Length: 306
Image (tube, rainbow, N blue to C red; front, side, top):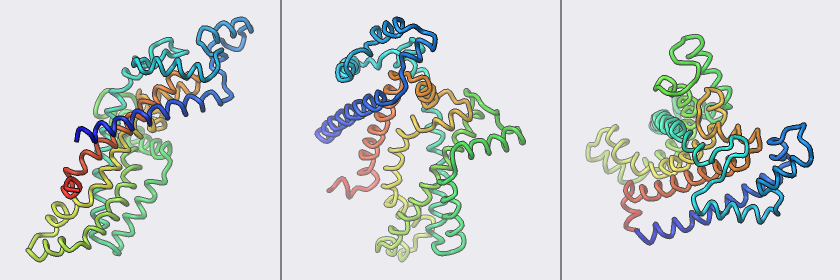
């Protein structure tokens, strides 16, 4: 186990270095100039040149990246060009809100996805199965901003069950988590259905039924555990995706997470924040996949024996 962890951590470091290099290069290929954003439209050429020199942006790109990499190896994500604050401080201030939304969204999508997937798999070929699959297709196809605004209008404006926006209480969390959960639940429903249908064909399922196990026990105890590996892998990916990919949802609901921080940084061409949030999200994905891989043998002992 120790050797496996060391190998995976080494691979993770190389992946994160590659992501930082690609992100850094792509940002500097963009036509927007961060110095102009800082100096303003009326700045003189001398002022622009001075700011560029102070930020080290007058150096060749490879020198800028190596300098940033040296800071990164010391745990320094740089300093925001616009907010004049350490990127680490900005991200840490937004991280609790992001983690809260991440946890809520994963819980919602698992409840929706597993429930709908089990119902569809146990009613394969029936009208209920077709209806659930059609609903899941609509869910995964719906734009985030459309679903978010629709839920906001119905449940916050018309019914007044939840606040229109903001952060701090469970009531503020419900609608953003539900928006992300409905979108992700569609994928989980389709994955759960496909995986369960395959497992329900196995001989040990027929043996369990022959021994008198009820339908609920067959599904929840014998089938679902063996069908859960793809679902666990998807949860590992969602950990990272929700950390940076919920930009639209955070904007609709005014949720102060790092996705909103990244969107503001993109608008202002605040490069240290953009790279920092990208690396944090990539780290989340890597750690999520690692946790999913470590959980797989516990779910299916055959993997451990192999």
